[in-house]
Length: 87
Image 1: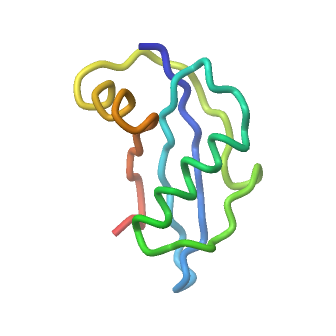
Image 2 (image 1 turned 30 degrees about the horizontal axis):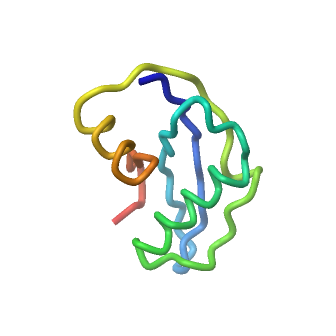
Image 3 (image 1 turned 60 degrees about the vertical axis):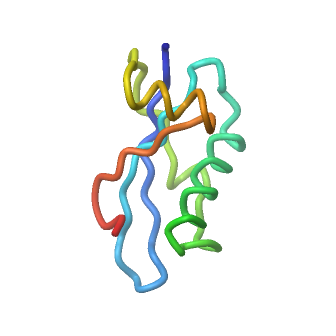
C-alpha cells in the first residue's frame, strides 16, 4: 500500500515536545483529516486539547508499507510511529 508520512510535533501538557509520524493512505490528501488522525492519537495518549495544526503536522514523503503498518491502516485508517516524547 502506498502511504504518505506526516512529520508531527506537538507540545505536551507538561511542556515537553512530542514527535511522531502519522502514516496514512496516499489517497488521503486533506490536511484536516490527517490532523484528526493525530488528534485521535493525542487523545489516546492523554494529550487531548493540545494544538495540532498545519505548522505542527507537515507532509514528509511517500513510501510503500506492509506487515504491521498495513494491518493497522486497514483496521483504523492510519498508523503512528512514535519518535520522541510519546510516553
